[in-house]
Image (cartoon, rainbow, N blue to C red; front, side, top):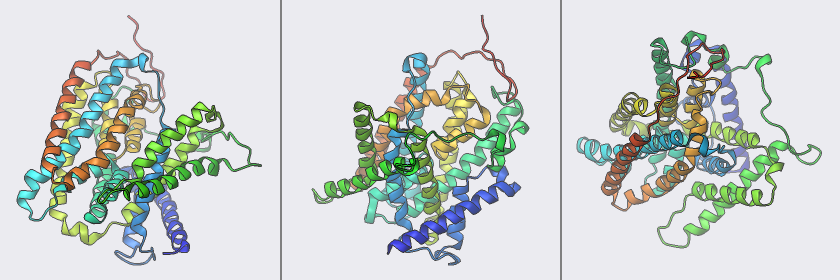
Amino acid sequence: MTAWNVFTDLGFICLLLLIGAFLRAKVTFIQSLFLPASLIAGVLGLLLGPQMLNVIPFSEGLSDYAGILIAVVFAALPFTSQLSSFSKAAKNVVTTWAVSQSVVVLQWGVGLLFGLGIIALIFANIPDGFGLMMAAGFMGGHGTAAAIADVYGDQWPDAQSLGMTAATVGIIVSVVGGILIIKWESQRGNTAYLKNFKDLPQELRSGLVRPERRESIAHSPVSTMSIDPLIYHAGLVLGIAGVSYLAASWLSGLGQGLSIPTFSVAFLAGFAVLFLLKRLGAMDHFDRRLFERTSSSSTDLLVAFGVASINPSVVLAYAGPLAMLLIFGVVFIAFFYFVIAKRLFTDHPVEQSIFLWGWNTGTVAMGIALLRVVDPEMRSKTLDYYGIAYVPIGFADIAIIALLPVFVMSGLAWPAALVLTFAGIALLGLARFTVSKPEVETAAPMGEAIEPSRG
């Protein structure tokens, strides 16, 4: 594999991203599904690539890009987190953390239990870690699927195709299911800020923003006479990811059988660099929004490359058990939305729960996209609460993703599944005690101001 192979792979996938954006803008059916351009590009890459029609000559290293890009995404995470004041909404933050952390832990736990206790009884020779594909695809998305596959390495090479397939199904369930839920909730008057589903602006459907509604993506903190601001920010993130790969490789070589994921090292290294920059007062010379663009661009490429690299023969070999697992996952998240989340989120039950739905079937980005449909001006403060709550959740995610496959490969799948399930139930009990009284607001159509009631 040469540098030109990388160049042509990137060129083809970027062309497919542009085609995906065009199809989203012009095809009514695709607009109705709210599918992101990256997912459309990935599906086109799979259909036209070597695995199927062989029209696009992707290189043999196509499946390697996901592992590289997830390291870039995790390296950027510390620079894109927004922390608000905890004291302003302490109880809501604790509830957000407890509910969110519980569903994350439960997805790993009950998914693993379902794989070990149900699927393994019906289908022979199913790996112990098969149940991890539910959370890896749904809650984690293509990034976590790539990370789990990275931890497994050569011990279970099928993990990447299965995880990417689960993540692709998850995004479709996230968007299509989320839109159906929003439509259902708005028709019953349960949404605080969306009066009528038909009021959604066209730009949400087409993906194109009208000239009068366009906003600047960032402000450059450096002069272009010195360095371009995009490479200035992306260079820092890519540098952290590159050094993290070398560090992870060195650490993995210290012991036989030791495997340190690059993405986890990149995440910790990102925080270390952020801490150093803050101590030196250098963060004033960076713009968080440009870090976000680096992360988002890497995520788009990750989704597109991840879907395009799916091996259909592997998916077909696991078709029966994978379908069972994913159907179980959809039922579980739907149950959590309607029966648990909406009862524990008393402030803005639909707005906060729909964000949780999008995140736990697709990605955080899908959760934000659905939240913007029901709360376009972010009056519910859902992201403010989540921004603080994500700090412990993020570290827990890293620990679970890095260690859980190791426990499973070590023969500890059942204990790990039981511990995670009971921990998730305990967190739900904690969440029940943190529920606060809802803030009373008057619903109004989108675009109209909402005044809080004064008593």
